[in-house]
Image (cartoon, rainbow, N blue to C red; front, side):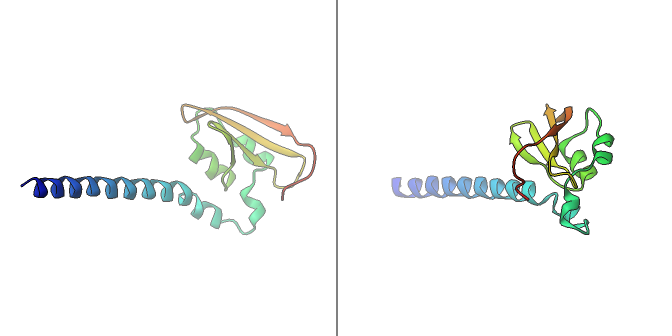
Length: 118
């Protein structure tokens, strides 16, 4: 009797573990690939960066997803709520976007120094 109870508990634990793994992997896959279609619409890879016209379209309260749609590409995550987009043309300029509670809170143009990583 104890052997059957042990097996049932083990199977239940295994089911919970597998379910948790599936949920985690699905969430990760969605987060990584949800912007793939937006970036694929660009004719050239540099178009996934931001330009000054796109930067001017950004408004307080926009979500990260809204910003990605405007820029036509993902930003590089600097910290929990801060992302940076390189400029499409200027290697010495970038756009820093800060979010608070998932909404655009602050945006600024930053001047970069040193060598480009592109």
